[in-house]
Image (cartoon, rainbow, N blue to C red):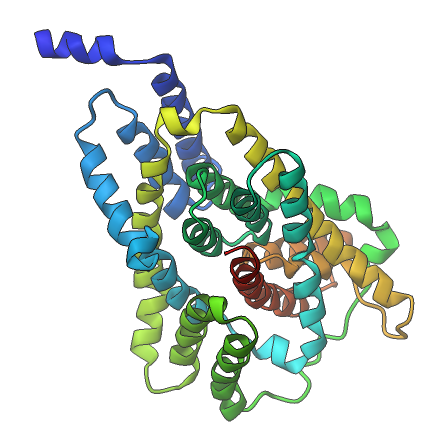
Length: 367
């Protein structure tokens, strides 16, 4: 009884606030079905580590040490990249390589937010880690912030994954503000074109890994694991392993990653004014990336006979495949015969590559 009373006495209001934050994440996961495999364990983990004298702290800290800490090579994010790579079909991108332009354009927010965060008083390594939130790529955000040794890893992780889950809420208003109704109704050619050969699909992940390795060596681990997962998918001799990577491996690692992130969601580390500022800066990066992708498409339309639906530029962020689905859905809302999925998927997968390269450049420039 005395021990019980001691636990109640040790409870702080900050811990109670973290329970509410954890509950909000669980609500979004269950009620709104926003990335439930990630937000649910993150929310529950936030409650676990903020119980007075919690016995779960040691276990979750151990998971963090071996799964995310850069002392052990950020194993969980890298393994997750194998599953993501196995999910991605690069055929739409290979059919229309110019879609890479939108993937690159949608990374502008990363570097712009880096500068803005520096102006707000953050150290360069922290500002760079905050900027990478704009990639809308959780594993890359974790890998970069851990490699740079940022003091705000917890806030960066929560912001990165939360905005990934909130793509259907955040992107549509920005897209509508940047485009006219006529632009959103632009139809694009959906003919399959020349089919991509199996050899091309096999060579693509190998060639990309080599090129990125020569240009941005710090990105080799990130791009290498992503492309290795894609090679498993496309090689044609590891179908069962590819299916396992896409479903079992990706879901299992995401589940453990979510609850492990909670190691950096303890009240004393998380509830600081800097956390709110980081979440705000992350939102700015996310919005600016969406804006940049759309505006590049509008700019290209000024010189192109075949008009591009500028909404596909917004899919250049790395939130795969949520962003592509959002763009496709918005196209159908404007015109029920306007099918943008093939184009938006191509832009989305190019954004996945571009975000990893951007992460490597950040490490090379700042690290």
